[in-house]
Length: 319
Image (cartoon, rainbow, N blue to C red):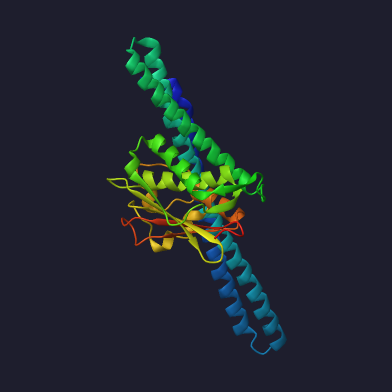
């Protein structure tokens, strides 16, 4: 069993996060109510002042201007406050998600290590434990890399390692990574190439991050049976298009643009057993934009799957 001492730091962290969320909400409610009261008071005072000074035209004009300035300031303050509330809620959700993403594999690794230390297990079972621990350590590494990539995305406006990349080969390598990560059969993810040797110029590691993140989401948020279809084709005007279609939980029309924001997770994704940091699609969009490409999503709605579409400029001269 996992020791109580191991859980204690995470309990403290969770309690601190809960207290901070409650404190922020109380403060936000207070300032929101305060702003509304100020607007109502300003309206009442200005209307009363106008009624009492109808014959003083100059003062009336000045009062109207002053009133407009006050109302504008209060409205802007309220808008800023609402945005800060949403941003703080996203940050808190991110911290909770990262805590979960770190706690679960660490707890698993410690449990298997304690079992190996205290009990005699067969060699086959030992190898199985090693595989599970390696998988959990990879999950930890992936979470840390996502956080680091998200923090470095704004700092690195230019690409560092520009090479000529053959997209078909890059997609096959990304598929192999996801198949290994989730122990999937080869038939689960299918790649269709309508053109040979589709090449782009870019950073191989960053573009692989794009496709592994998209494939990881396609598998993670699938429903009963996992099935992912990838299509690579050329478009007019020297552009390449990669379509990644899944049969997952789908995305509502209102969420299609918002899911690419940092820390944001769609409500139907947040209720799934699969957890995430809300950084994956933000990182994907940032990398695609650095490669002068576009990314968008198509979905018929919740429960009807999604298709993520990445368009990248081909190397000039490619036909």
